[in-house]
Length: 316
Image (tube, rainbow, N blue to C red; front, side, top):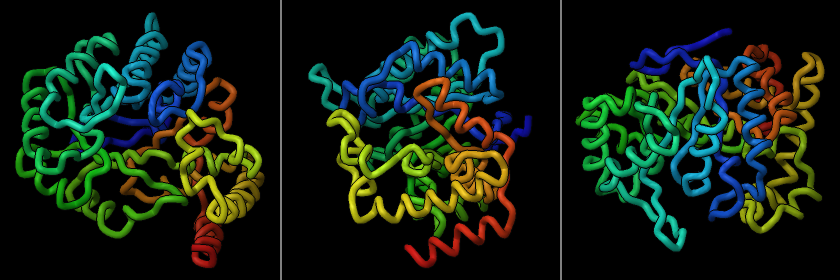
């Protein structure tokens, strides 16, 4: 299985990893609708059996529930994947989410307990909020790494200026940004900065939160449940969704030539850049894993990339 080294770490990652956002369930502000834990566990097992060697979750996904499901899925497995999680998104007794970079030590202890591990392979600041506390949070992250609770430390959703501030305190192993054919803002400054400073990149939502999988339709988008955050996203409403679904037809046509899904083509497009170490792909069932696992070893030709780019230029 093809792997790539993540930044300055010794982590060798498969080109895609299992993303555990959606398996947090629907009972929180950024849920994906109702989710059965048994389906989640089956999805994780299918991903690992298919060759994926890392899982990315976060404390806030399901307000702790995603981490607990990951622990259940890994219990008893002889070959364990790398497990990554994130901090800085907290919640109170009323389940209201807030941002904090001053409670990271407590967050680490809670994640270690929920994940049932002694050390976290990669621990990431989920969001750089509040901005004025970036140095406080990153200093604590560096201390926890020195203490052996964290193997490597990274950031998520940081801009270049915030990464520069953190790097003055301790090296950044990785950045986790949104990057897909739906969201390309990081191409201008952020990806070049990471390449220049040997910061690994693991991009999230490479399939546009499900828009590019081939399973999304206008009717399904209109009927997303209220506890699915996508029901409130402009990308899932007209006029944007019309453009995105046209793009899917191009991805499908390319995929059909290789026996791949449109989602796998979308993931491969993000992995065409050497700066991108690996991509996070979510799946809520073993069946969904079947439609993404082919991205582990699939690459696009220059002509296929140009075909996609031509559409994007004509339909920005």
